[in-house]
Length: 459
Image (tube, rainbow, N blue to C red; front, side):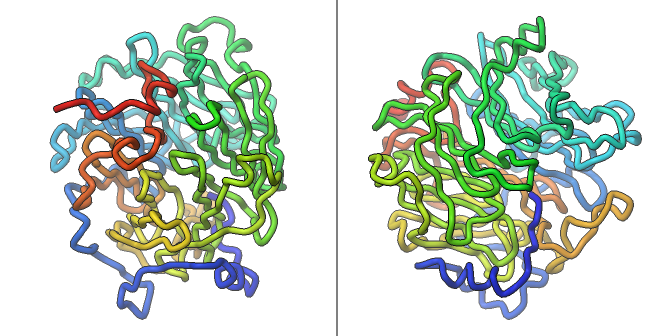
């Protein structure tokens, strides 16, 4: 989330140089006070999840019809919220939690959250980032047993993951069902690597020194994030039969074969041609293309062709094949790929959806402005002034998509939780669109090999 404004001619040239750049025509002459959306997008509900300017960071939805639960990370509120959305038009908060002694803590707080299932029980992992000016600077995440939802009284803390070797906590995380059957958690850390935790060991307790089982080196380090990764995607490649790690290493992007978790093998990188402050890297279900974000103002999302790298013909990709932006004046943030759609939490530009059936010519198909904010009044400054600054880091921060019914969730820093449906998108299974059934959604019971080929259940 850092360095959202890197203003200058270089940033503008970067945008112009990206071939095939696409942006919607909103008919607006000013990026101020954007409201509403296009007819394709239906807003179902909106809840202000907290108080103050910075209410939420990430959002996570469970993916089973019997468990209609949404988790919102509370950001600088140092808290998290759990909602029952069996009626998406009327979400009901069933549990909320705040770190003990919040006034003593310093930092951006509750950043990211992921749920997972193992041995018949459900868990939620909330990551944290606290500075050494207060307590818990080595706290990376807290794990909660959420099996008993919607009864909030049954939610129990089961573990705290600390990493004192590199204080500052975990910015991002990714929960993954590996092809070898293990449930893994990948985390950012303030070191040139991504940590990997065996979550069965974590929830079982025992010696915390045994929880971390491996690490993925950062092949493209940068001075930001202490040389570590910012974000990552982990998924199964049905073509090569490999578990793959896609890491945004700030100085560029790295793709590793992690089929053998304890022995990651670098496959290729994406660097050069303006790649700086590399933030997010998400492949398509067939791993042939990838959508990337660079975290500073005026920069579009770029799309790369990975096919030659997958075939071993090149070790580094330098040129995108196209780019997309909601508004060239702003910045888009996180995204979820559900081929042929890409769902984007686009800061000031709220929820955005573009279609990449032809990856060289992405096309905007839906949007809804959730920020209700003025241009360049975003996250920045110091904790003393409430982090108020002049960046474009304001508005839609986190996004998630529920595959079985197409529900879309946005966590907006300024306005809270939003739920949407998009006309024509009622569910997603990769096999329905000629793709492996692979996305950020995990099949905790069957694993990724079966999941990739799994057809939609008959109704």
